[in-house]
Length: 473
Image (cartoon, rainbow, N blue to C red):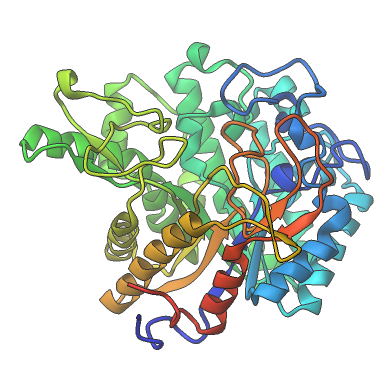
């Protein structure tokens, strides 16, 4: 058993979601189209020309109409916080308008009302893989510097409307994922294989400046709020003790660490600038940009953690697993999920210590979980899922969070990804389930959308109630 004093008394236990993966109602309430409405298979195929009937995200799990029921279930588990995103195209249907859509703003008022009713702190992501489609089609997304102004206007509307009610904000979800999924992460319409390095890194710069402007706006309009960045954390281990492998792993890790370095330190690190030079990339960076980055660093660092990878400089040893969708090579010492994501609980402790040592900013684990194929069964007349594999995964990761806290790391909270089943971002499947709550909907779109508590629902409720004391080593 862990020591019940390991987790701070104000630790923020909860769950995490994204609007495009849960809300549905893609054309209701004045909402415009987003890039997700033309990504019916996630990042696995090229985008479609427009919405198609095979896109599960059009309905998703119908959170738009069932949010009160779902938030009540989160409260039953004891959630202290609920991470959700605001769909940019609900607020600005095209993205470049001057005035927001009141019907969209009112929807999130109602969501926040339900959170407040149950004593749950909202943790809001401003942009979570759902750039308005018009901005992708007309401006090529974040490649275009005009996006900075559109995003700042959007963020200011959110802070003015919800700033007194929302204490925790994240500017961009997994901002470093733009390197691997330019359309999903950056709204960049140019196909990845045709996108120049200069345009890709200029898009990254534009997002970083926008993030700094949002941080500045939050301090002006919501001074009691805290604003953080959000990065995809993926430690890279050397495949062997060969110094060249160690160097390869460090280089891979730095592609992710750079985003935190810039958000926390307010300037581009030397290794990043060298990488740009080596790739022949010349960015347009103004003196005003540099000042904005330096003067508007984040209050905390949040991150997702699902897997680690290995790295090697030896091309003959580059064995790529099916889960290596974000780089790296397969680690032969680790087991894998059904989707090939390597399971590494100790890696979470490593990341927490690395980030704390590096940045000395409070850390927030805002995504972690196991995607698996669940089977709905009936026991004593009650439908449920016996998901011991999920319980084991989460237990082992949370034990390592406790170890990191004991190491002296300042960890604000933990929100399990997909606390209710949702549509997968990478593959747009519903069969890749993460939740404590089973949603009766299948990959072919069939199902009742009824909600059922899995075994893990009751397990997580006890973890929260005991503040981690119920975890087993």
